[in-house]
Image 1 (tube, rainbow, N blue to C red):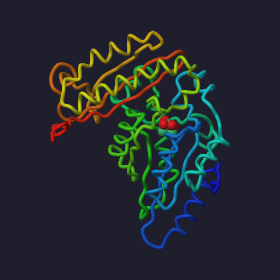
Image 2 (cartoon, helix red, strand yellow):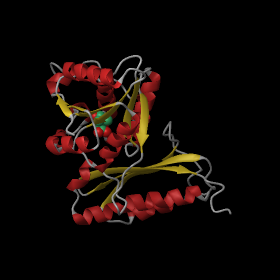
Image 3 (tube, rainbow, N blue to C red):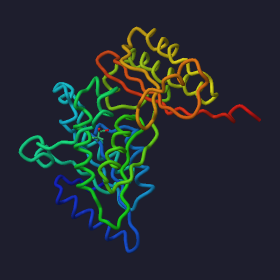
Image 4 (cartoon, helix red, strand yellow):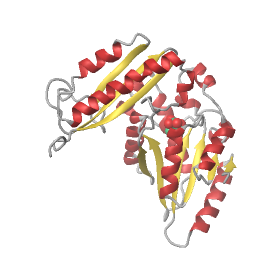
Length: 303
Ligand code: PAF
């Protein structure tokens, strides 16, 4: 069924109250799926997860200028509203909120914004200054605008693909006492292993092939981690750097919550516990990010 498409906060509130009322009596829940559109299977996985776990599902489509440093990047961000609504309908989304710039930021950008702090300055933050402040500011607004009611369960869905974004949103919700529970959905990949991204459409065939080295290197670390072997991060870095079309920006193994590098665990010593491998690279004109949660499995390989 086609979802209802709404453009104002007032319409969203009225429709949410109506649908939650119809879903009751008894405990009700709302799942929120924030997106910037240009949807692919990764977004569909978020919407499906929200559909499975909630009475009412709201997806938002808003290309947030606050999180783009480069105006050309903002301009060329794909806008595919009709196809997006179709995908969301197939996933069983009830309401699609597509506010205008003026609806979200009346009179221009907001004067008061959130700061991602130190966690937002490293990795992506180094390459995209201010990106996470803008992202958190819009996510905070969207969480407020779709808030169901004090007695309804409230869950918001984000992809593991954007691991630093996810860590920051979790931290914002904890630090600023937001009502929503944050649910992470695993990264969706192409059959060859490339993490799906709205930007992949800008890769040539040759670049898309070259980009596979990112997921190959992450898989190598994943295998070593689960076997409690030294990760030999330097050799994985070398593998990526040997691909001429790929310009590596960072490749690090970090603590999943604080994103602090795991100093020795990732090189010569056997891997223990958990970690998160983060990678970013430029392939042609496209910046790609990917990551892999790592977990030692001491029982693995034993009968
Ligand atoms: O991941 C995205 O698409 C965006 O950063 C988000 C969370 C929708 C905020 O604009």
